[in-house]
Amino acid sequence: MKDSSVLAIVGPTGSGKTDVSLEFGKLLSVEIVSADSMQFYVDMNIGTAKLPVEKRTDPVHHMVDICFPDINYSAYLYQKAARKCIEGIIRRNRMPLVTGGSTLYVAGLLYDIEFPPGEIESGLRKELEKRAESNPDSLLEELRTVDQEGYQLIKGGNIRRVVRALEVFYLTGIKYSELNQLWKNRKLYYKASIYCITRSKQELYERIEKRVDLMIEQGLVEETKRLLSKYTLSSTARQALGYKEIISYLNGEYDLDEAIRLIKKRTRNYAKRQMTWFRNDPQTKVIDVTGMDEKKIAAYILKEYRKDVTSSC
Image 1: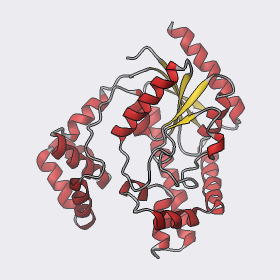
Image 2: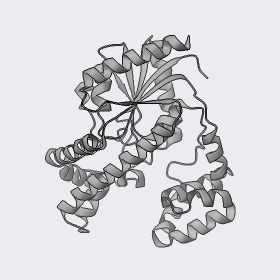
Image 3: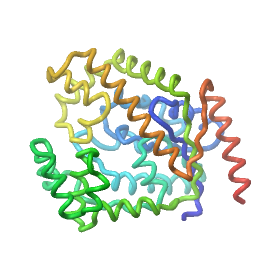
């Protein structure tokens, strides 16, 4: 474990992490490292609830707008780049504040997990993705042949995980089941204090509903049209919540009302999965902030952080 101290404020989408991190910047000398799996894409602004550029300077934000949406940016690349950001922040005698809700990126940054590099846009991945569209069951069967234990772990899960598991195996020889075991045995890479903010289900869902409505008002449909006209979106970018449903709407698969309904539903489901992961992480302290504004939350987390640091000395 690195001796350097890192603070992380995580939580489900819509919980208020961004506002809290900005408030925290008023309390400590911090620089923010984003752990959002879509905010590093240039021009994907409304659907990712990205802060305007002028609000990313105080505190300074890192890992936002770092690549174009025609790239499948990987957890491996994120881990390498984000850790360099943290090293720079520490050299400047400031506190790295990791904030976001993408569990894979949070874990990859804060824990001693080694991701296989793979290839960003490998020909193999493209081939596997094409096969997944026409015959996903054949890929699942192929995984069972090369990694029976991995097959049992993923069976019934997301086909994208099957694609990635096969790609990693063929490019590196590492089985998904072996990676899963490493994941279970993970240890903190930094001396990290991780706080997850959560709200009552009713309050969180109301915030998600309002957030989606605001995105539509701000021009999510128009932003998606611009993205499609400007880029050949990577498979990762096309699957982003909000954009995926609007793309389907633009393709005539359903009307706008149905697209909005699906965005809200899938965002709620995503928030559930995020909270399940954070609650099951023994290193993460979950804090219920129902009814609290960002100033009170930031002050409370700072109090808890100081208490935890004192008790660990």
